[in-house]
Amino acid sequence: MKKILCVLVVLTVLATGVLFAGGQQESGMIKVGIVNLPPEESGYRQANVEAMNTVFSAENGYDAKQTNTGDNSEQIAAAKGYIRDGVDYLLISAANASGWDDTLKSAKDAGIKVILFDRAIDTAASNFQAALLSDMAYEGNTAVEWVLGLGLDKVNLILIRGQMGSAAEIGRSAAVLKAEKDGKLKIVADGTGGDSWSLEEARKVVEAAIAANKDFNVIYAENDGMAQGAVQALEAAGITHGKGGKVKVIGFDFNRFALRNVQAGYWDADMQCNPRQAAEISKWIKNGSLPNGIVYQKELLFTTDKITDKDIDDWGINADPGKGVVTR
Image 1 (cartoon, rainbow, N blue to C red):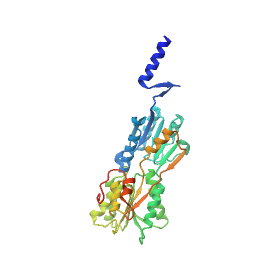
Image 2: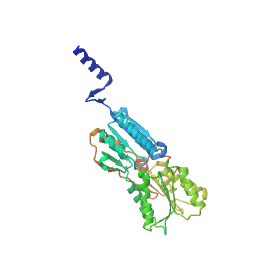
Image 3: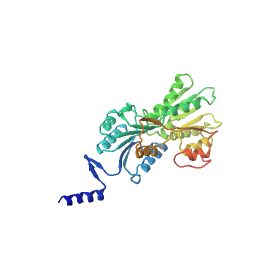
Image 4: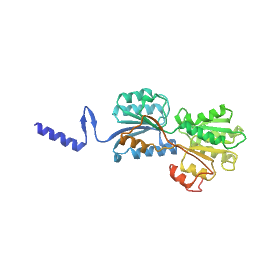
């Protein structure tokens, strides 16, 4: 009878790939829960979500699920669900930087390794294992340095923020706010594209500034879609922009349509936010080499006078409309 039971156990393991050791399920697959924002948020997020799905696939040895929502409470609920499911790794790009402490502590208590990606969370370093982030403060500082280096007699700037309270909005806005506090520029209009970083809402911010006869010569839009909406408002009002124009335009994210707009002189600059964290995180997991703490990605700024086709091929995200094609 004992021999028969042993044979049955072996056959069960061979058939299902499941072993039980110390009460923990072992399937040979690495179980991952991913909490992310929705791809509709932006071209950046679309590329980021697609990379997560491609890398953390069954073909690559992962049993992974991804939740996509821009609501912080829904994200936290999803993370708690993954903790209950007993994932090996919990990956988070938070809609809002605050409110995560209890959830992260629960994951740690459950022996789950937490990896933050793209966006930082306002929490103690002990509440996560590793983070592969865009340095949003660096992005903001680099973009503002470019603005201040334009040689304008005065900088009257329209600030179009992303989702309020997100790490991206905080970092990119802080540099502008500091520059105004230091007397280096003036913010003549301060608006937001909302939680969805909306092109339409960004356009309304600029339309309102034009209607109020605001004098401005820089648009600082915290993603490419919002920069596109802002420029639509300029076009409708007959206000020149880009190379040789009255208004200088900078976006963020490195969508290829935006980089082509910069190359064509329709916009002036674009600041990178690299969405390709998935492959590096997978390498950490597979190699058992998770770092402790935060690793920042290197990110670039391209301007009309320096951008090349190779830059767009190498660093751009999403579809390329082609050289000389302007996306309005």
